Length: 372
Image (cartoon, helix red, strand yellow):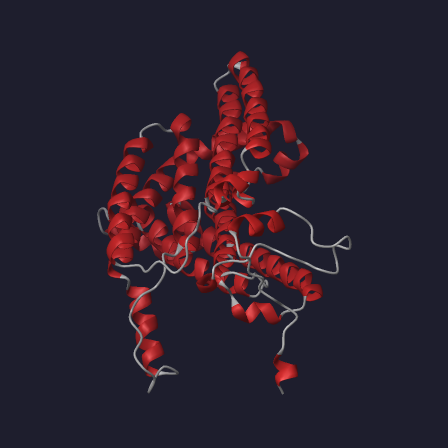
């Protein structure tokens, strides 16, 4: 019975931190498939259930998670399209004729088309990070921090694909998709035109996300409901555990990064959005300082492992902003300014490659000087 419970996994300890550093920085065997090693996480960060997964099954698990996340991103386009239909009252009347009754009440149509789409979209988005985290737990990561990092990446690209790009497509470019594919050189101008047309929607989205999102973060209704359900179902009769959870990096970082992306892109197209974003970040700073100090429990140390991904998210925002600038200057009939932005885009990509070459290794392997 004990032999059946054994796992082909071992944790190796060393008498000195220098010895551990030297082993981490070297390959243990000439055959890389014989001993597959990795820097061990701290004990409270280990995902013990994933240690039993064979190494040969891990690629299948990762592929399955990628497929599931892609399908979720694709199917989520349906509610996003419906939300954009609410945002455009003319389309709403065409698709749903009874909506014409909203015109009988003064001001109601403005409230419906202004606030309701962002509120509905935020309601759908609130569930997505937890679904992505559940998928990330099936990918076979050896630590909880890696599971959250994987979920963080999936949620960010989900938000960029659905909330940003698909909102633009369903709101402004739905009639120009075929033309964009047949004339790729016109994509920047189409993107600039779509971004300009959706400025009001994203201003409302920032306000809704700031007011409702931070309010829900303080009140914690989701975790309260989950704790009540757990107490009444499988947690009944067990010892009551403290109501403490770790900081949900997988939910906070992608949402804030999306706001950074929206603000970076609209800094050129609609500068009046910037005061709303400043208020959004100040309010978020006050809320999360309180949550980190008084609400959440630190289950593991991140050791700065999220920063390379945040840097990548910022790079994506800057590249989208520069592509939008190229198209915007083209729409304004300023070809000189449009062509002058292309070297800026190239320099941004070159600087990113330089940073990856010089600074990214420091986040994966600690220096021996630190270990000493």
